[in-house]
Length: 328
Image (cartoon, rainbow, N blue to C red):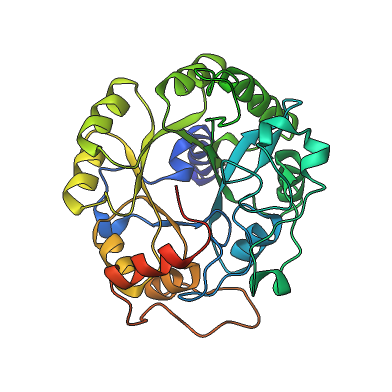
């Protein structure tokens, strides 16, 4: 009759295990043994005409809900700071590029920002009526779900409307505001990854929220960025799809880092990213990736599968060039 105490001890050990392991499997596990974390990149991606067609703006509430409804483990969203120091979801540097507003996020209050309307042009605006939202709105929405999704918070810190030399002056305020929001809504820390390309900001998070999972975004020079991530004792690196190779992913994992790749639409590109064996992919073609992984989606009316569309990397680049808003 020693079975019950044994089970109780085992249960306590599971509860006490490092929570970051709930977000990622350890890098030491064989690639085929790790369960790939699949996240919608900026929700359901960017305005794109094909492969797949997407009429929802990046980091919009509709795009986020669509990705989760289609079976994503979570979403990556872009965070900026409003004039009144409230974190809001918005991708681009200027408001005119994607809304009916002007200037920068930093020049309007959160209330004013959330009254704007996204504009993607024809045919997207026939099908979407989204407005920017505050991070609080997203967190309140996610808190109502039975299972909290994984949430990657991509900090867009550069303020193009700031005076010369002050483009990152509000980064400390963004850190403080983000920490307040995460605490206020009791966001499970094991479900959150905070990422930016600025080491200084990651250090602020480490000092003010030591338990946070942090990652360095690397979009170009992997060989320069990886040693920085290791030296800063970060949890991971987030790399652009064009930077990802099996060798680089393995090198980062062997250094004790989790590897997240962002981007990917065509079947050929998705195959290449899967062959890298990352820990997570923030993908633009969610249904295509889930289909390749043999995972079901929960959407009732599925669009035609595009995972095996005959679009190579060069064609995909052309599609991205035609799309109004690109991954930065």
